[in-house]
Length: 135
Image (cartoon, rainbow, N blue to C red):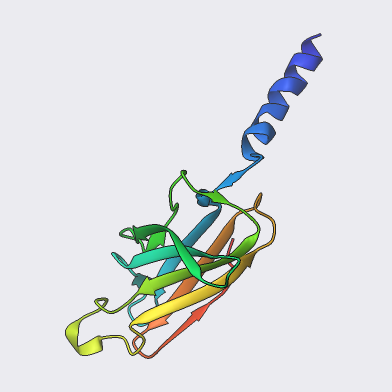
């Protein structure tokens, strides 16, 4: 009897980590400033989903924190298998003499399995950017 209680307790965290419908917390991002070696703080970021007609519908908006991260777009949005777009408004980022060449960065990606986490960082400099699937 005691071993079955221990087994039930050991399985409890797995139940908490496998939701049937994933929230937008399964999508996160991080702006990394390559030129200054810091996280890009206070950058407006929007999350949109591609509709069946090919248009984009905004789901949420956030600003990067002091470390350049958006850890969650809120728990009111359910992530499903679809095409998503993160839009980074870089137009006011940086100092006046280093205004970015790309005032807006769109990153389009696919969520194939909504039960796993999708981290989509963007590495920026005044004249370029790069992105990848993080973890």
